[in-house]
Amino acid sequence: RGIRKDGPDRLAKRGAPEHGSEEESSSVDELEPQPMLPIPHGVTPDIPCITSDDFAEVVPVRWLIYELMAVMAVVLWWGAPQSGKTFALINILFCVALGLPWAGRVVERGNVLYVCLEGHTGFKVRVRVAEVERAQFVDWPVNLMRLEHIHALAKVARKYRIKLIIIDTLSASIAGEGDDSSNKDMARLIHHASLLARMTGATVLITHHTGR
View 1 (cartoon, rainbow, N blue to C red):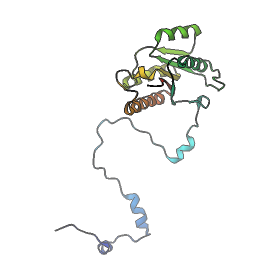
View 2 (view 1 turned 180 degrees about the horizontal axis):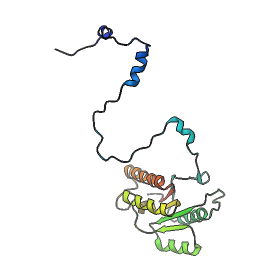
View 3 (view 1 turned 90 degrees about the vertical axis):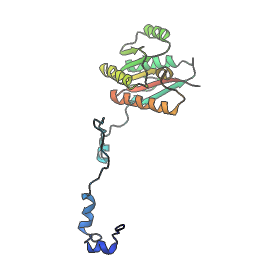
């Protein structure tokens, strides 16, 4: 009775491998993990893994706008209300759609998806005057806190081979379901935006007002 203790003498009598022996060096690799809990049925997704050798194949940073916005990145574009953020965004939209330099920086040409959630009337007038091509516009009430809306946006972006997704604005995109002063809600928003970028290969640009 009592707890069995295997001291050095007992291990020696059982034929424990000697230090540095071939048996000792190989025994570690032969031990298999012993899970104690099952993985729930139907768990998705399968998370891809790479080895250190695979890093040699990792593609270097590709720039949508050189040294400002990387391809497949999540970018926050913020400024004070009425400071001209939307005009600057439309200018970026044109430059990406036409492959023109923006603020002296090289731009990779591509299609743009603009999700306009505020100031619909004024926005439509500005874009119509410019008659921008290679752009798609969404004025449906998208909510980035909802994963099903992220999937719907990804489907549209892949259909039109979008390289830049603009969300205008952050506050409108979480209305009723998130608080822009909550770290938890903002972490969830960034996670969803990152999923959108990875599912589409596009840069996700979210505009936000300062002071909120």
